[in-house]
Image (tube, rainbow, N blue to C red; front, top):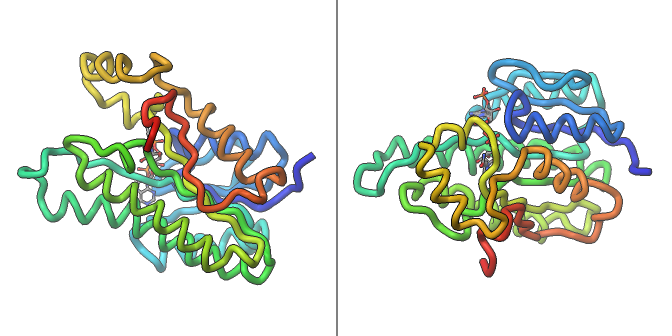
Length: 236
Ligand code: NDP
């Protein structure tokens, strides 16, 4: 039996974030999601937030705290891609992806850490990607933002680890969501050939690893990078 906690998942209106929120609800936690549009799953509280805006993040946390209590489990999941080859990549392509995926995680982690320090308990889970460590042609911006999350989690572990707070990274491979549906069929087939498991994963397969990491049994895991990639990134 896992202790019931207050959970906040960023970008919980679709894809992996939605599946993570559903999984936490199924386990009996109090769950809020941030969304710029749409709603989280049934049973969750949806609050509006854009992770590129610190004031919007602060307002969202204040709303969650008032309704469900201080956030004990934070899943920084919101992310975007703007893929193109290095020579074609504009400053805006690079900085906007880093601002959402990496600085966005910084903003929510910083805001969440206040309550976690007070409670002397916290679970921080950052949703990175296999390409954060493997690299990926056409994703200089995205890969850089995702490997930055590793340094973030490990530094938070060193700063806050003695206060009952863990910070970990999960590194999904290819997951069936809107993000991968955008890839051309031929490219999807090519990627599947490179994945030892021979298939993409479902969002639920990622969600179950996240809830386990946030649970009572994973309290001594911190600063780790947990792959959920069917073997794609082995050795990294
Ligand atoms: P989706 O594109 O399906 O969903 C992205 C989510 O992030 C949406 O909820 C979106 O909100 C939200 N979001 C984007 N920008 C912002 C912002 N500025 N402020 C607040 N929310 C924002 O993506 P996935 O579910 O596929 O991906 C979720 C995470 O998993 C991402 O971090 C992604 O990089 C990572 N990942 C995905 C993989 C995959 O194969 N799908 C593989 C590895 C990692 P809105 O609906 O309002 O746009």
